[in-house]
Image 1 (cartoon, rainbow, N blue to C red):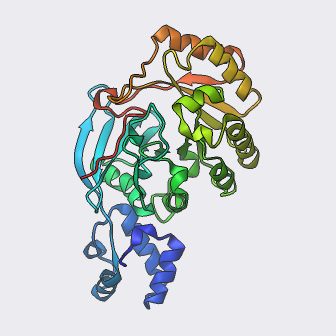
Image 2 (spheres, rainbow, N blue to C red):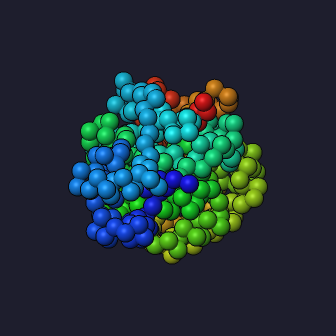
Image 3 (tube, rainbow, N blue to C red):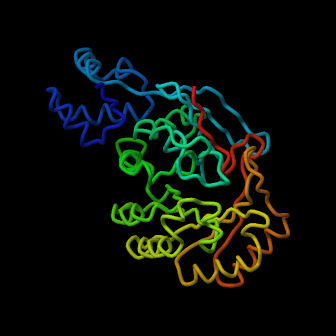
Length: 340
């Protein structure tokens, strides 16, 4: 089987090169080329023709094609439909903030978590993305916009902790100083609550921000909108989150999609405050976004403001997420896979 060099860590690349008779210093040259956006061995001009030929016999440099591109007229948010080497497509979103450029990336083609308010899970999971395929979303978006991407949110298609090993390798690679060198503190990873993997992630010694898709303050509501809760109920999830905070000393961001008539009353705000009391946490309120296959609706501005204010009154740090890319279906919960 041919090796995608972007799937290899710096150490793995070094070991492979030594195995095929190349000096160790080649690893830095090749790793840098790969993460700079090189699309073929011929572009690696500081390697000999013999070395390039040797690499091409067993390895390849994976790429993505921009199949479609949408730019928001509201805020410059850019959504990409990227075509993978096997013909399937995923979506990624570039967002512009005062503090820099952020990309929202996917970790799977589809998703098997089944959250009712999310388009990404419709049709289930097709397959996991490799470390190189996850990385390529950043590389090729960066090449297209001509600007450095400084922040990553793993909140696109898929559940990152359901593709744990590939995601961890990607995180280490994207943080490597020989590559894109994006600091862990500039990376957020979102999970719907796969409890055993949260414990594992806490031990990885990565100073990333963990974002937990909570969306309900109790098991009754959460069971109805998030099937994962039937396996890992709220109490177990919060216990794992407290362990994560204790182990990493990092604040957790709890994502909470406000669905009118489902989880957005004052009673639910008070219940949520009791659940999170005393935790090093922030609540990111997200007025639910429209998707064709669901009838969920967001409340009016006053309802949203009231819910947020009540949390703050009760000592919970809460803000309403700024909505970006709504005119191009690029907001939270709207990304979806495409199978060709």
